[in-house]
Every structure is written in C-alpha cells, then in structure tokens.
Length: 156
Image (tube, rainbow, N blue to C red; front, side):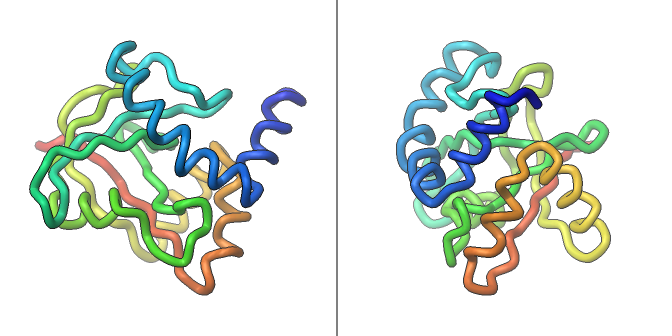
C-alpha cells in the first residue's frame, strides 16, 4: 500500500470512519456497484462487492456492499460492523438464506455462504486482515464478540 492508502485505512479503522462506512458509504456503494457491474465503488484501495439475498425475516431482496477477500475461487466476507457488539443484519440474512448473488469485478454470479470455524476461520482471518488491517482494530471493540467470517462458494 502507498501512503495515501495507509492513511485511508487508518481513518476507516477509527470509530468515526467505521461509522461513516457502515452508515453512509453502505448506502452509496450499492448504487455505484449495480451501475458499473462491480467495477467501481467509493472504497479507495479496497475490493468491494455487492451481495444480494433474501432478508432473514422479511424474505425481501436485500443488497449490501462489502469489502471482501479471496481464497482461490471463494470469496471471504467479514461481519465486523466496524467493531459493533452485535453482528450486522446482512450476516443474519446470509445465515438464514445462504443462497446469494454477487456483483464484483471478475467474480459476479451465484454463490452459497457458510460461516467458517476453527482453523478454517483462522486461515481466512489472515487473508482478510491482509486485505484490510482495520478488522484487527474492530475485533478489539466488539465487547468479546468474535467477528464471523463467511465463505462464499459457487454451487456445485
């Protein structure tokens, strides 16, 4: 990363930056990602995708823009919510309805989500914290909640 990218990452990892990305950018990026087929977002220096799936309670289509990591052909998502004490709504949606659609540069298509545990989670955590070091800061703010990591894989 260059100096600018490191500065942006420090801002995003702060409480104010986390709030901004969770509450402002998350409302702008879906619009941009849909119109650019996943090629552009407001996140500077971070890969961002759009996940579409059914809401856990409503059953309505939900769209969420998320930073992601890659492990082979799989996509890794981190349910950090900027270090909040509760998991984000999109996490509950994917747990209840793991079938989803992804719009992302070179990775668009149908996927199925599953939560990682144990060594598999630890391996994925290393990958995603290499993509965005702020996740480590977020983990210290959760009040003891272990931040879930989900793996999205294409159906067989």
